[in-house]
Amino acid sequence: MQAAYYRGNKSFSVEEKERVAPGPGEVEVDVAYCGICGTDLHVYLGHMEARIGHERVIGHEMSGVVSALGAGVENLKVGQRIVVRPLDACGDCPACNAGHAHVCHNLKFLGLDTHGAFQEKWTVPAHTLHALPDGLPLNHAALVEPLAVATHDVRRARVAAGEDVLVIGGGPIGMLVALAARKAGATVTISEVNDHRLEMAKSLGFATLNPKDVDAAEAIKTATNGKGADVVFEVSGTQPGVDLMTAAAAVRGRICMVAIHAQKPTIDLFQFFWRELEMLGARVYEPQDYDQAIAWLGEGIGAEQLITDTRPLGDIQSAFEALTATPTSMKTLIHVNKDL
Image (cartoon, rainbow, N blue to C red):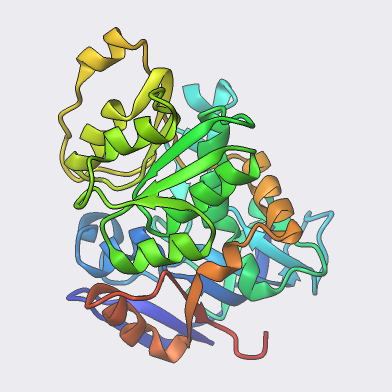
C-alpha cells in the first residue's frame, strides 16, 4: 500500500508500506480523504522535529471505511463508513480519572505521536471510531475532526442563542468556530486581515471587519450598541489578536483561547478585573463533540464550502508547498484512496 512519509526539510516521500493487521481491540481502516491542518503545516515547516522525526506518516482529519476488525471488536463491521477521533488516552492519570481523557497527561495524538492517515490503510484503536450517516459524503466527512474542535470551543464558551460573538482569525478553525457559534444561535462577526479569507467569510454570510482598516474593538461596540462581544474566540495566535480579545469583550464576557501561541502573549489582566471577564481554555474535543460535528454536517451547516482544493496522495508534496507559498486554499484534502 502507499503511504506518505514526512522526511524532514519540507519534504514528503510517497512509498510502499506494509499493512499493519489489526490486533485485539483494533480496527483497520481504508482511508478515503484526509485534510491538511495547521499542525501538519507546522510539521512540514520543521517546527516539530523532536516529536515527529523523519520516519512518520502524519495526518488525522480523515474519513474512511472499515476494512478489517481485530479480536474482540464489537459494534463495528467491515464496510462501515467512519471517522477517527485521533486521541488515545492512558486511562489512569489524574485527568483521565477525573473524566477528562481528552487532556490526558500521557495523551497520544494519532497521526503525530503515531503513524497517521496519509496512508491507504490505517490501523487504530477501535474506541476512536465514530460511525457516519449514510447520506454524508466521505469528502465532507473529512471535516468532522476540525468541526469537532469548533463544537468543543463553542461548548466550552457556553455560547447561547442571541449572544454576540467575535471570532478573531478567519482561518479554517476560525471559520468553523463561526459556523458552530451561528448554529448555536449567536450573531457572529469575524475579524481577519487576509482579503481572501474576508471574502470567504462574507460569502458564508458573516459580518466581517479588518483591523488594519478599522478600530476593531470600537466597531464591535458600535455594532452591539456599546455592549461589546458576549463571547470572543482568539483563533489568530497573534499579539494583536490577544489585545483585541480583551478590548472587544462585554462586561462579564467570556474569552475562549483556541489558538496555540508560539510565544507567550502579553494579556491585559486589568480588563479581567474591571469588567469581570472570564477566560477559558479549549483543547481538542470529547466524544460528544464528534457526535455533534457529525450531526451538524449532516444537517448542512455549510462547512463543506471550506473545501477549496483536493489532490491525490501522490501530489501531497505540491499540496503542502501551495499552502505555505501563497495560500489561497481554505481547506485542502488529500484523496488517499482513489476508489473511495
